[in-house]
Amino acid sequence: MMKMTQLSIIFLGTGGSWPTVKRNVSSVAIKRGGEVIVFDCGEGTQRQFQKSALSYMQISKIFISHFHGDHFLGLPGLIQTMQLNDREKPLHIYGPMGINQLTSELLSLGYFRPNYNIVAHELCDGDTVKFEGYSIKTLQVKHNNIPTLAYALEEDMRPGKFNKPKALALRVPEGHLFSTLQKGQTVTLKNGTTITPAMVLGKPRKGRKIVISGDTVPCESLIAFAKEADVLIHDATFDASLEELAHEYGHTTAQQAATIAKEAKVDQLFLTHISPRYLDYHVLEDEARKIFKYSYVAKDFQEFIVPLKK
Image (tube, rainbow, N blue to C red; front, side, top):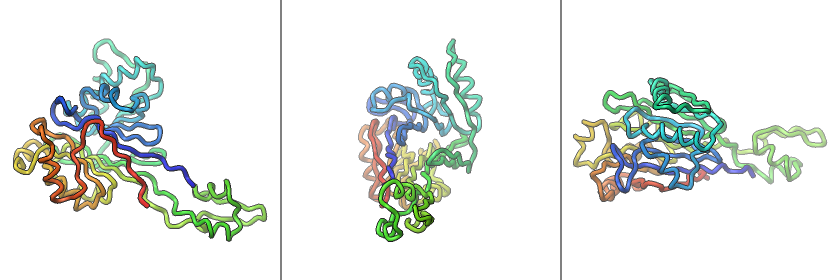
């Protein structure tokens, strides 16, 4: 059997605008195997890492949705803390147009200069960045006039289900050749017979998909972008009674986020960027669940392991 790479989401900051006693500002970590990928890095994110089971030294990439302070002001402290802990490997920071200049300015604050390499990458609407085993795709969303990106982490297609009886019937011996075929590689038997993966594997299966909306008003394009995602993490700053206020400030209500999740046919919806006005988050969760059953208001330090679909 092929070893499954564990994929989990850890919510480091689920509040919007400013930190509260219960919620820090925006940051989501995705742990895939031994790699940690961070989406947004609001102020205090490094302390959230300290209080979590994650190691910030495992961060390989940081994706910033837009340049409001509650989404990026944690970068200087996190970068300096990594150096104080002797980081050597490069750190890659991705974001909308302007991330190169922003990163340069953050790295020149005070008397600090990093000893490790920090590389900024500007992304545009519709970009795809390919990594080993997965890719990150972008979508321009609508947050007033602020350039803002939604992100989708999509794993590569997985090989189809291995047909053991068929492999044995083709005289493939159990052991490492089974594993080789499951990895999509052709094998040659001792008698000279060539066995291709297509002869013993079913149809390729989709990998897992996680979509993070960034701050946005409801976007029709986000429905297609999040189509059949395993998890959609969506801005839900306000409840439906404040829909006009939400639109004025470039945000989404819980009800609207649930409608997007339903139309996109996602498996799970996590509501985030919660306004500090909500001491009781159930008003948002209850509102969303009337439309989409699998809606949850995310909490700081909550972890969700994304299972592989059968």
